[in-house]
Length: 102
Image (cartoon, rainbow, N blue to C red; front, side):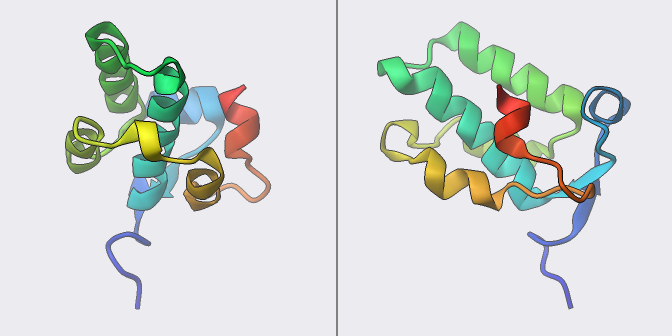
């Protein structure tokens, strides 16, 4: 039996076209956004314009609204990329989140 976090959630056509992915679990959408926040906040702050870009980007790829709401309160200053990256999985064997983020 799969949990809600393990269930695959279909991505948008944009995700399919740009990353070759058709679905990912909730945890992957959530942690991908968290990783982007950690990177954006590496200078100590995520300005409103950067947060708006992140939210719009995540909506474009098909991230669930529940994940997007969590981005708004995420403690990016104390998060570690090495803890978040392994949680990002997709429906394509060999797909690499770190490589995609470059």
